[in-house]
Length: 80
Image (tube, rainbow, N blue to C red; front, side):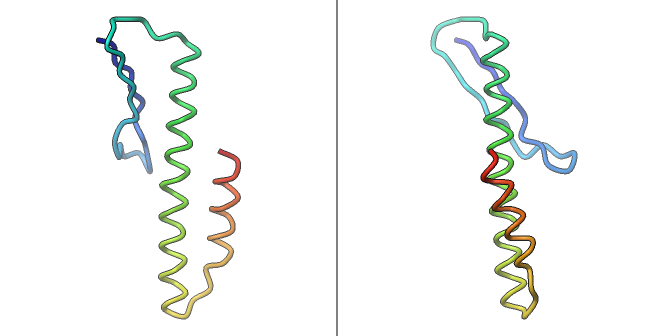
């Protein structure tokens, strides 16, 4: 069995790990590890987008204007 994992970090805290497992023993190539890191970055952008969207909805419900925050999160998400 082979395992590779990349921590999902936010603000210096590990939220979890994005991992892959293969049933056969193997060495992961540098390209595969870089791809895993890229995917982990995409996961963190998605988490941050959802967090920002939830904050934006909450601010609107309280009468605030968080449209700029929401647009920033959407733009970040598009570049994943």
